[in-house]
Image 1: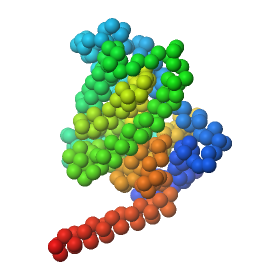
Image 2: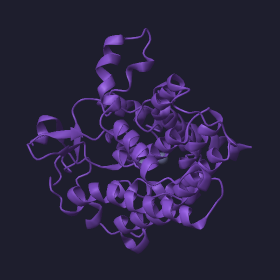
Image 3: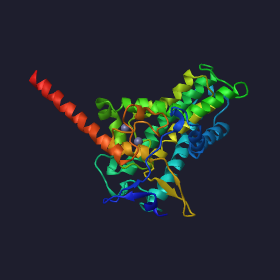
Image 4: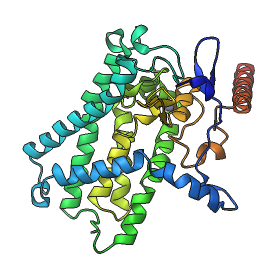
Length: 341
Ligand SMILES: [Zn+2]
Ligand SMILES: [Zn+2]
């Protein structure tokens, strides 16, 4: 595909989409039903539907009987861990292999023209972003994910939290299924903003930001405390009456859904000279500029409300630079004041 029909490449070779990002129209006022209707397919396909299906299949195939879940046992806990490792590996490597190992589409639609494997860096374990990101994801990320999943299943099985059945509460549970992505974005925005507080950033979140040119394996490359905060999105199903399959969907949304934001390509080309959108640009801009787009994919409009939204346009770029200049000015004048006292 000709990526220059959809965007432009700068002198360095970095590609950017022509059209600015559009956030979800559900919060527009006055409501715009036409826009919402047109947006609905993009809300479901492909990711949300995929993770709903993965949660249902996972529940049917791998989660043991409720009686087994009532007490912790090494066999089923290790089984959950093993399955999560295998599924995460398949999903993450499934993106990495064609795009970054085989480089099937070169750097067409690639935001940053460089490939991390070509640029060893001291900030990463073994100087390799890929290796570092993969080890952190598999050996810290997936265990934390599994621990919270096991705790969630055990809590539901013992009736420690409300366990609603689909047959008795179809409408309520359907509503919860629909708001899973909104819960995710709300939760992610809150914890993400928190770990950008300078001291937390320095010790915790900087690990994730080491990958300023992210690839699929960067998705769960985090400090263990960030892993815990990130996957604690499942605790919303401890306070909202819910069902373990939906809580599983919430975890799949976090664990597998982290990849789309870190693909590094705007479109993935398919065999028939077409491609599908990855929705990676919003979070890519966060990795590039740090202080914009704290929300995952703009489903919850906090970035717009608090003035940190960057839609990729020149105007948004100017606004961001203005904010940075103002911040610097304030910092300098505060330092001056403290010296005078
Ligand atoms: Zn990220
Ligand atoms: Zn961040």
